[in-house]
Length: 227
Image (cartoon, rainbow, N blue to C red; front, side, top):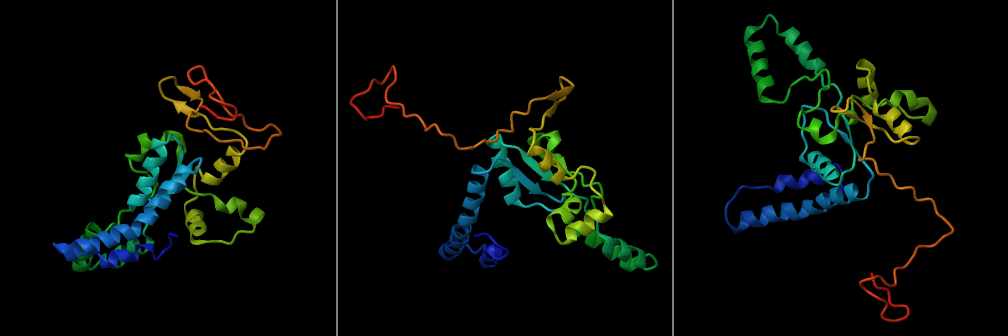
């Protein structure tokens, strides 16, 4: 199973050429194959995918799942929250009268991913891939907290400071009652969204049918199915 220790195998990685290096790299790849396979199976068996993508951090696994989901013509619901660095802003103020310290801090910000995204704008690459109606700027757990007895988390604190305009959970609640439409920018109206194909698996008294013959494959004997 995938957990927080799954990526520990990376510590064994080496760029050493030759057989020993190849063996170590092969071990890393084989060790992580199970996790890659989990990604594939989760997408295969799901009706849609929810991706949490704060846009200044990228995970190849997330992009892999998103692309695979869209290849299967399934919807992706992408949560792109605001990204802020309050401590960094405070440090900037603290070093305002320290030119050398401020210069070093600016260099640090350029060397590491300290890139605020206060509006939570998603990557432009995801926009045509996912579709305009499937982006959310938060989860909206707070309005369901009392109903389900949920405890507050760091995500709730962030959303309290930056209330989402279009949270995911109300969308999911509505999804249980009706299929969302999509905006057609050519027709300038909402139309049927073919991405949403949800199975209704209520049991029925009638059993499944067995094909025993067809015009091109007539039955060859009793009880021999020809499909």
